[in-house]
Length: 405
Image (cartoon, rainbow, N blue to C red; front, side):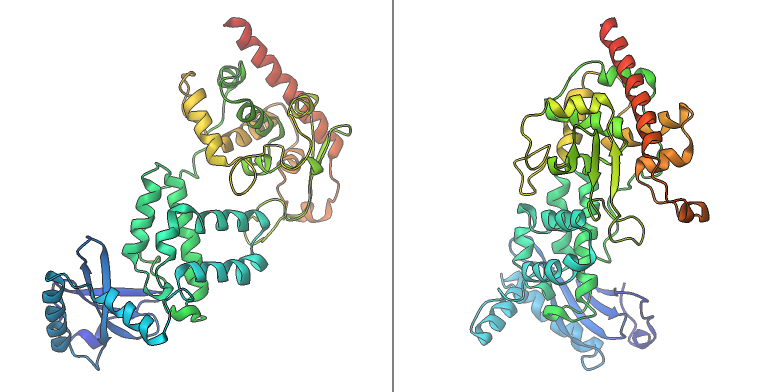
């Protein structure tokens, strides 16, 4: 399509972010939510990498002038020039230094120290840092923050997607978008807009599905050890306690009282839900079978499931791989995730007649109703009895499966 010179001034201003109106052959009129209109040329350099070159603002640069400038630059590009890279080098030479103080990496580090450290829970902080400082993003981090384009972000997401991690693709996109959403209104490092916002989510997350494991499935999965000892222990702890996979994998020995059969999560340990940045302290009674699993794990310092990653503990992705490669390859049941085991625990507790408020306390949910606000009882003994009965039932199912093999 071609832009109409008489219609440019009447093009709508987006409510948020920015919108590009193409004129063909890579030339676009970019309109920001603050009303600014800028001519941008998109092109591929000799290496095939998508780049952009800002030509000037409208109406100071007319449509005719933008088209002529665009065609001149396209001739240079065909001859091997890279206008965006040349401009970056010119600015670096003018300052007498490189862009090391204004790269995306610098912006991310600033976000983590100035915003995330105050506003995000410790668990979220670790996850943001892991994704936004990992190996995959290093090439993107080297680009000046204000010059990162949606094409650069898309290439980064391609790298993650190549590892067949659809959920992580969505998470990475959200985390980087959060950085730019924070930086743009503050004009940090020259950032005025969010290049991530215009990219659609690549994968639909099946948050609405209600997968849980029935008796026969539980018997098949837990009838014998199929994966690494740490993964088997972690999966059993998730289903026997009903806690989130990430919380189980980040369990620390200092929070576990084996003699008192109690796991005490301090305030801020669990991820925030809804508008909560962090969650209050939460105690989990441990069934005798859980205590035995923990006693069989070597070491009594640091993380229960110590890992070799930068975080120091085993990651949920490692647990997912254990399920796919070891369990689902041997057991003919529909696929399930570690979080489905938490839903499984909740479902079986309800099936056994456990009162709903006791199950909610077990899961660590916060009851915002009037009854929940005034009922401050912890129901520790009721939860302990319910989890012990559930552990006995799962043990009976596992033994039945083992005996039939």
